[in-house]
Amino acid sequence: MNQRPYTAMVVIPTGIGAAMGGYAGDALPVVRAIAQVADRVITHPNVLNGASLYWPLPNVFYVEGYGLDQFASGHWGLRPVHQNRIGLLLDQGIEPDLRWRHLQVADAARATLGLSLTDYVVTDQPLGVELRTASSGATWGTIQHPDSLLRGAERLIQAGAEAIAIVARFPDDEGSPELQSYRHGQGVDPLAGAEAVISHLLVRQFRVPCAHAPALSPLPLDPDISPRSAAEELGYTFLPCVLAGLSRAPHYVTSIAQANGIWANQVDALVVPEGACGGAATLSLSQTATTLITVAENTTRMQVSAEALGVRAIAASSYLEAIGIMAAHRAGVAPSALQPQISSLRPLQESTISLRMA
Image (cartoon, rainbow, N blue to C red; front, side):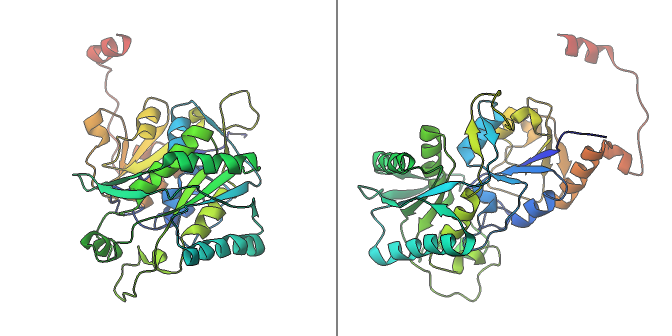
């Protein structure tokens, strides 16, 4: 029996202190498992990026957050590709030694992974990244010279880049309590919110796949760091996973007539943390036939539940349970049939009929 591909989407918003997905690539095991249940998995760099670590998954689509929101709203579709030619955009504010570290990563990706890159561009001004923290504890940030970022990206696109990897110099703050908490698995990623601002700007302006890697001075050795933050301690850069992800990131399309496109109405299931249901992608897909699955154990600094929004969802205690729900959904089995007790059917109430007809 022929069925259309089962498509799942995994969203873990950036910079909100998610217990899983709030660190460098620590939600990769979740996506690897879901990719065995679903034919296609759509997710974003925050979920997949593990600094020097990454995992090639042929049925997983690496989609920047703004592009993910546009996809979920039905404005953009996704067109799979075999390979992207990546343009590397470096912040002029990166010191020479640190710049060379990133250029060596790019050359290593070409030599060992066979990736295709254009010549690189350095911005004509330092980008001037500044970090901010909201009262909720979520992180965000600004850049002083977004015009320089846009000019650099435009030069790369004119040179044939089909995807853009940005490396911006972020402030070093190794003594801050926030960073120490994060390294020990208890805080919010202090960089993630600002990274999202940078990539959102380029995707909105040029509609090309984009992802960001921060440039930072190496941190001093700490034997007690959390396993969830350990990926960020392994090298001089976070660029390897970005280049690997962008190498096959899908292109954005705006016409449903374009061949081989994936559109929001093909998403069967969306998996999000229980308290993070207020994002644009979740709100858009909640108005469609997509099954929303919320995960209780992935706690965040946000407290926006499906119930509070009046959105129908299936509650899962863990990602293991969510994967079981998707397996049942794909098989056409109601989750209630997998429980020892099933309630009897009841007569449809007149008030319910009136409400649905109104």
